[in-house]
Amino acid sequence: MTDQRTPGSAPDEVPATTELGVNEEELEAAGIDLAVAEAAAPDREIAVEVGENIVEVRNLTVKFGGLLALDDVSFDIRRGEILGLIGPNGAGKTTCFNAMTGVYKPTSGDVLLEGASIKGQKQHRITRMGLARTFQNIRLFGEMTALENVVVGLDARHRTSVPGALLRLPRHTREEKSAIERGMALLEFVGIADHAGTLSRHLPYGYQRRLEIARALATDPKVLCLDEPAAGFNPAEKEELMELIRTIRADGYTVLLIEHDMKLVMGVTDRIVVLEFGRKIADAVPHEIRNDPRVIAAYLGEPEDDVA
Image 1: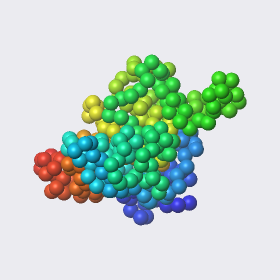
Image 2: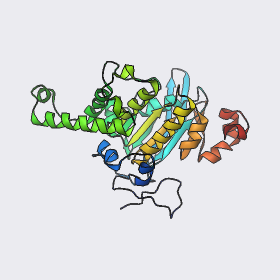
Image 3: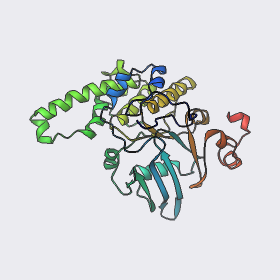
Image 4: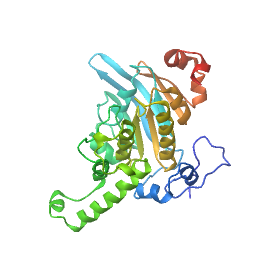
């Protein structure tokens, strides 16, 4: 089996993992049963090994008329890591996110997923290829239950035709049963299984955030992109979110995180890319970013001790 060590760990500290890259010790510490974790994504197939580039952003440029929103940005995301993408307001973080996930069409440059270009693909196609995202503004189906919202995400991997669903052919019946089972496993994985039958609009705000993450995980992503998942959270909820993100990585996922809360970013990421005025100004591990004068001047704007 390939080396599945957690990014940043010492060479001789190799945690116990399964063939899917699941870190059993971290899942156990988070209170997640291994059977639940593997039931949440039984068909996940990842071609690259831990530490190899799974996403490559190459010279990405986005222009809106005469406005240069993203200027020749390049960085990689390695399988098994939590990468933070940060910067002050207007730095180009969301533009980069949107260009990667098909919301915007890049003016130039490319985005590769496992070596294959996804530039210009429609959003649903990029999701099926393995790049799933959440949104800063929650986009759930309010009149559907929590479980139904997750099942919608699972539909991205279903192969039943419309006639097959209408006629309830055996394949549709099998996929429907599997979707309910996996949907419940995902709700348990993110900690809201007790609310499976609750309409999503009636869920507490923090649970809605967790539900949106569960729905994104339902698509079996190779990379999970989280757009400011802690927006509106109190300190206790942010701590719980950090634990959830670590648990998601422990289950073999790669995570790209946009977030303004520096304590959260510094506490959960393995590496951080910093943007300013649409250009990349830093790409390093958290403690180096914390002490980088360019980052302090552009984004933190306060003494080091205040952002620890």
